[in-house]
Image 1: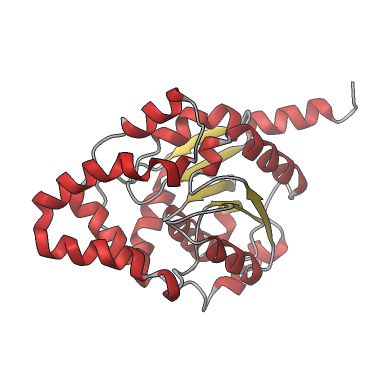
Image 2: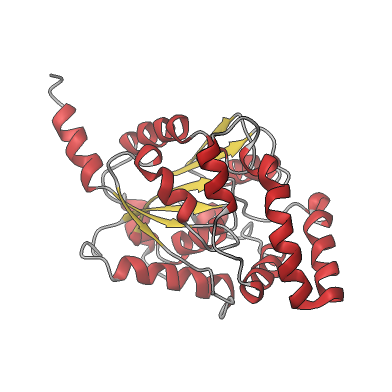
Length: 268
């Protein structure tokens, strides 16, 4: 046996990762693939399905932090994983509380939504205002199966398809507030201040969050590593084993605790 293999195994078992899911706030898809995506890590999830964005992204980040505060190992820095829109809260948490974050895992995330592509989410928001919440709720139910190929790609298992389609119904007020916030969010003024080791994972084709957004994010974060996997918006769900290997390798390469640059910054 390799002399360091037992140490690595123990580290994987005790590692904690806080998952902040995307716009719908539901972490059920991530939980379903967590053993392959995060190996032996202990996974904490922040369910924000009914969160109407009181206090903006900063308020959402503080509520995500409360999940870590309530954990028995609250004093130890944790990995924070932001999926899609959840990346805005993960970035904000790392900026405001750097000593609490050992590293960031950003899955199909963005630091700002590219203006050239903003017409795509603005169009349904405009329709939403015209038809109201009642019809929007109906449209969202129909929209979910339509988005399946763009989210998971073609050829995924029937089990994964069922899990995607059977997710809880979207909370309309919460979803609308997050859509509006996503288009306004812009972390560019402070991205360079985030020194947390960061892994950014994007798909090769993503109609929801342009791949360019992840590439630009990787260029602006001082300590980021970018990887691309074949697939769509939820390529980490469609290919959890491949994504998990990248995550495991990256986690083993970062310091076991926050470095001096994080500690010196403190919490804002």
